[in-house]
Length: 357
Image 1 (cartoon, rainbow, N blue to C red):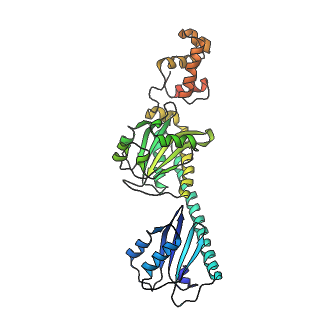
Image 2: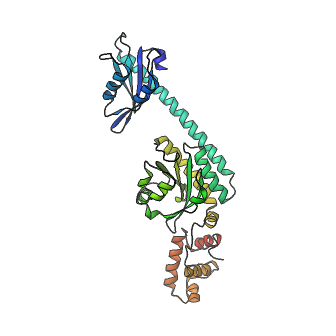
């Protein structure tokens, strides 16, 4: 649009994205009269350098061969820089003209940002509406995995329920991946140092982007599922400050990709909506998918069964020929394993999970 307006007679325009210590050519547009083949433009869009001035020199050699010292103006625009190659016979571009071009570009950036925000709002709303129709634990995990692929820029998803008692993740469903193979996966979170560090030091609702899956997952999974780049999305219940699961997302076999901050921010809402739904069916999911296999020992089940029947700590101790201190220790361990608020809550959860009758 800027080239066609001819506010400044130009041969080509390039958008340089400033990324940390590197500058990268993000987009190149040539004027109609400039003959530049697709391959050459693609080559230009892959250029990187420490400074935008270095890129200006490289672009001028590729797109303006034979022209000595072409007039190239640089216009900073927030995280991007515009490079415009002015036609040979054009007059020197004034500061006022540069400011006009800068305002024009910033206005378009703002419009694009607003459109993108509206698209994300629509996507999260559609995801939420899809989840509403779930009526069971099996439907819930299916809706979450499919929705994360349908409404986000990913092609595969594997969902794991987090078992706080064992501090492990258990595969429950997958989309565009063999669900049966995923359901055989059960791994201790402690076996993934980077993931453990992330869960310990960062907000549980914040997703993490992994450029190379081999940094965080065992080689057998990287090989079996042809993993490369990966996003780990917490399935989180904000009202209870509780991590309930993890979703692993990528863009297909052996595919490297990057994720911008806007996508990572939008992912938080998706993870929370999924967490709120799955939390409704958590006990059913635990039973259905065997998340907490043999969580309670035989003695712990005996103690909890008596508590569920209304026995006090002293009465349970007497019935089991234990000291009241030992029973208290058992109850403390049970509460921790079942992520319960107190012994009554633990008893209710155990009954729902059919750990006791």
